[in-house]
Amino acid sequence: MATTTTPRHEGTIMSRFLSRLASLVAGCLLLTLVGSAAAQDDTTPIRFQLDWRFEGPSAPFLMAVERGYFAEEGLEVQVDSGSGSAGAINRVASGAYEMGFGDLNALVEFLAENPDAPGIQGVYVVYDGTPAAVFARKDRGIETPADLAGKSLAAPAFDTGYRAWGIFADANDLDADAVEWQNVDPTLRETLLVRGDVDAITGFYFTSLLNLEGRGMGEEALTIMPFPEYGVPLYGNAIVVREVFAEANPEAVAGFLRAFNRALEATLADPEGAIAYVQERDPLIDVDLETRRLKLAIEGSIDTPDARANGAGAVDEARLANAIQLVADAYDLPEVPSADEVFTDAYLPPQAERMIFPGQNE
Image (cartoon, rainbow, N blue to C red; front, side, top):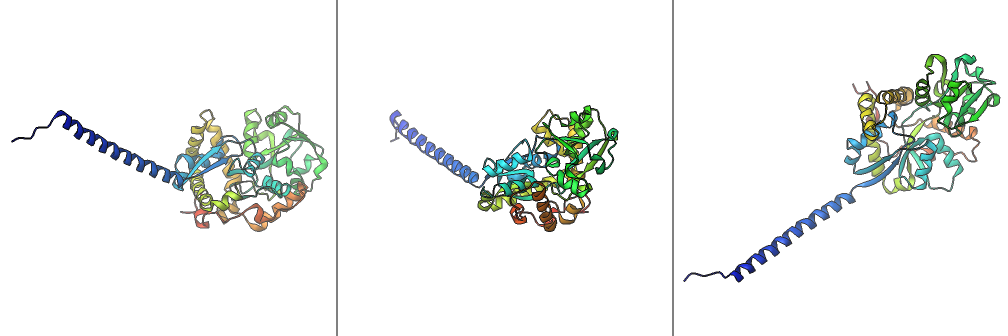
């Protein structure tokens, strides 16, 4: 005799099926969530503070984000624009950012004046030579450092050239007090020189030169004295890290530097292509201008004989110790930080991986 299935029995079977299906879906969802949480647990977030706006020299940092170099190292990196090297140092020291990009000389000053503050160290020198330079009007009879005596100069008080003026003066047998300084807003510095209100200014080479040209004053009207070419052995900007973060996350810091090193190599090989990553972050930039700014930074501060000899990112210990003492004397610092307090190579990629300048690996 054939078995008949009642509507009620059919409903029971369907109910059991739907219940099992729901359990299966819930299980899969749980596994997905667990896997996602595990993946997130393996990712280290890093807030990174630039020294300035999104301009040409910020290209390798932004490239490392967009090309996934940081992500491949298990890092989730947030790169923010800044408002000055000293500000970047202070924000990293305060814990607002884990890492940043700031002037190594500003770091020396911070460590000397805040001996009890949380430690912060340089871990990768990007600007092997300080970009600081003097820009003087030729029509004021200025051809050499000696010609600056009796002249007026302008710069913001936080400007490296202003702060390190005593070092430049000593290196060129010029009395540091032989000039008259004006502390001005950074947006006015080049305008004052173009108008003739001052005889000279100090500023980063790749910033002030382009600003002056944009205001109608070209190189032919200027005497330019880059600090490194006039006897000033200071380092420039470096990647810095909060020590407590580095001690707790050494592999994350090392991974950050590996990723940045890759991006810097790609930037050195193709500056024009690297600017695309700056434009992605700020579509309003002048691409040609920022490409030139990046090339000037590379030629003047990044691709130097010392950097080629030692590999990008590293320091010469004797030079660093000398630079620290020069800064301590010029800034009249209460303490003199040791070279080990200012910089560590513990997280750098091996030297062979840092020989990244065009022509070195051919």
